[in-house]
Every structure is written in structure tokens, then in C-alpha cells.
Amino acid sequence: MLTDFLIDLVPFTHDELNDILSHFEKEQVQKNQILIKESQISTKLYFVEKGIGRSYYLKQDGKEITQWFFDAGNFMSSADSFFQQTPSLYYLEVLEDSILYSITKGKMDVLLNKYHKMEKLARLISIQMLTKIVHKVNAIQFQTARERYDYMLTEFPNISHQVPLGHIASYLGMTQETLSRIRKNELLK
Amino acid sequence: MLTDFLIDLVPFTHDELNDILSHFEKEQVQKNQILIKESQISTKLYFVEKGIGRSYYLKQDGKEITQWFFDAGNFMSSADSFFQQTPSLYYLEVLEDSILYSITKGKMDVLLNKYHKMEKLARLISIQMLTKIVHKVNAIQFQTARERYDYMLTEFPNISHQVPLGHIASYLGMTQETLSRIRKNELLK
DNA sequence: GATTTCATTTGACTTATATCAAAAAGAAAA
DNA sequence: TTTTCTTTTTGATATAAGTCAAATGAAATC
Image (cartoon, rainbow over all chains, first blue to last red):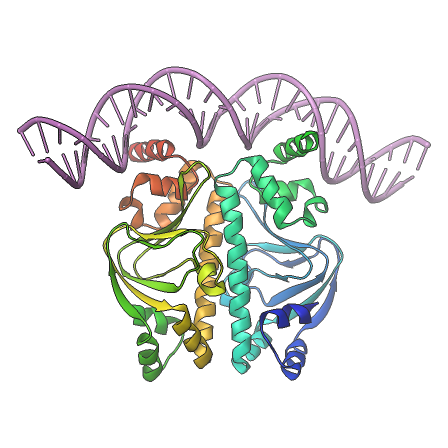
């Protein structure tokens, strides 16, 4: 699955691909395990082979705000913390028992320096993330709570019914109660 | 200024830098000129030497929503449209008489293929943009109208008093009237 | 300087969503 | 099964921000 993801973006040769994959490690992590805490500097980038992850932060009043969901088949990270080695703005956790492939910052730098194509890959992934987050901003900035939920259903169809209501509500910038009411009305439509 | 921006991110040699700069063109554009329209595929990436730009889109009811401001000293583009050659989600316009340096997609591809370091530069710029937009989402998602305005003042101190009120209001996801009232109260503080 | 045009402010009223509190439903543990 | 704990739903009320409309102010044009 990771292999497919990589060659879809950049035409690596067989040898290059094997070299790159050998820098990753397979990790089995259990539900609710935290991969990075807020203010820590991220040392690893993850690819979600199986499972679901999310990033979140705590408001002053202690409430968790989900910032992003990471579905299987995607990279998962506090991207700016990993690439720029700055303190993470988020916690990163796994919401179910999951299988991840991880690569350390050191090994990633080796690959980025060794392969021109690897830099290209990293650029393409960054732009993909940028595009996705732009979609989220557009959905959240000027839409009603109901329209935001519709965005959620199209952007994360799998996730929408697999994670606690409160996580989704905070991701969409609304309260749990509001989301519960929206879902109820959605059925009556 | 463009030169400084580039060498700050990647240590290009003198020759590399000259080669890269020779692929850019200087453009003088007038206030309110539109650089890309929604649904067009972006052919150029711009660097703002002098002036201010913004990206925006139209809601169904015809209202303009500002998506981003581009201050002098930054790249300006519909990034996903330029790099992925997909239809732009936005209009891109200049808000004052400006001086821009532009590079076409074709020339950019030449540079990206020629220089490993150029790919790195593009990656770093993409991640910078990603970081900035993440900050915006955080500000907008769960803060009051007043707090959002405070974010605006810190992220775009120069711009906050140089562009029409309505542009800023829609950027922050509030109405013009609300922003006007916030500014009034801000003075009384 | 007067006039038209565009941008901002102010006021009165409405509404979507938040908040607070409690009940119901579902899941996990005993 | 029963008990306990967690998550979701429902109800009543409050409030921040939106809408509509008019007034004021500033800039551009005659």
C-alpha cells in the first residue's frame, strides 16, 4: 500500500523503491496510543497502513479540538514539526489498533539528499496536504453547520461513522450537541 | 528581495542563483488587475516584490470570499493549480499597483528537473504555506470574531489597515458589519 | 465646489449555534 | 444479568454574530 502510494506520485525504479522502503519500520500501535505530544519536536513521519489517526490540540479550557483525521493509505504527521523541526502544535494519536510504517527525520534527510526524486515526492505530498487543508478552510469558513458536515462526509466518508461524535464535531468547529442534531435531521431529509 | 528569499531557504551558488533568476520575468501590474480567474489553470507563479495581492472566490450568491493575502516578499499563487495543473479554485488579483516576478510552469519544471536544490526549495515553500494556512484554520475554527481579528493583526500587520474592510472580514469568516464593530471596540479598549 | 460613486458605520431585529443540565442509550465491566 | 461508566441525545435558554436598511464619510468625476 505504501509502495503504491509512492510510485503513483513519482516513477521510482525498483531498486530505488526498495532502498527507500528499507528506511521505514513497521509499527503496530494500539488504540488511543499517542505518537507525539504538543510542544515536542516530531522525530517520525508515519504512513497509515491500517487504522485511523487524528491530530488534536487542547484549548485553554482543556477541551480537545481535532485538527485532522488520517485515514489508511495516507501519511500522518505533524508536518511542520517534522520537516521544520519545530515544536508540534498538536498531539497525534491513533484511534484504533493500527499498523503504521514510520521513518525518522534522520533517515528521511538521507533519502532527500540521496534522491532528487525523493525531494520531488516530498514536495508533491506537501502540496497534496496543502490542497486538502484549503478545502477544509473553505468548508469551515463560510458554511452552516450542516454544510460542514456534508463536507466531512465527502472528504472522510469512512471516518465519519467510525470515530466518536465529539472528535468530528470539534474538527468541524461545532459542538457535539449541534452535530447530534444535524445527524438526526439528516435522517429525516 | 527575491534573491534573499531564495538563499535564505537553500544555499544556492552564485551561478545557480543567476540561472534561476534568469527564468523569472519582471511584471508591473496595476491595481485590481486579475492574474488568474477561477477554473482557469494557473500558468505562472508570482513573487511579490512590491504591493499586495489576494486570492478569493465567489459564493453562489455572488459574494466574494477572500481566501488569502499576499504581502510583499512572498510568493503568490493558486499553489495547487500551478503545481498540479488543475483548475484554480480562486481568482488572484493585485490590490495595489505592484511589481511582481513571474515564472511559467514550463520554466519552473525545467528548473525543478535541473536542480535537486530547486525541488528542495519548492518543498520548503510548500511546507511554509502549509504551516501558515494551518495557523489560519486554528484561528478561525474555534475563536470569537474578535480573536480572529487579533490573529489577522499578528499574521498580516501591514495588510490589516491597507485593504478594504470587506476583504478582511470575508477572510476572517465574518461580515463587514461585525468587523466594523470590532474595530470600534478595539479603540475603546 | 458640487455631484456621483463607493466604502464604512450605526441601528433595530432575527437567527443559528452555544451553553447548561438532565435523560436516554450504548458499551464495558462485574 | 446487573451494575457502572461513557457517549449520545434531547430540552430550555442565552448569546454572538448575521441580516436588512439607512446614514455617514471618503474618494473620484464632472
